[in-house]
Image 1 (spheres, rainbow, N blue to C red):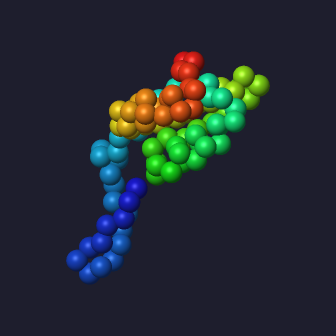
Image 2 (cartoon, helix red, strand yellow):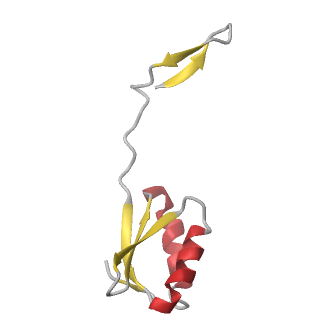
Length: 93
């Protein structure tokens, strides 16, 4: 529920149940990155506000999972393509 104001400026709850939509499912990709470059890669990902979130999938095998929204997929894939050589990155899944 959100609030709306009437003509007098008084706020009341607004019923927006018909307007609410279930957010689209997040997407993800699993990557392998050379261990010495993980911190720099994480810094680059985090420098893009609300683009993606990076989590460790398997620390012993250096697998990272990158979560992103469907709306960001093109930008995320473009960024990964642009930095893949620099980070010796491989897509695992």
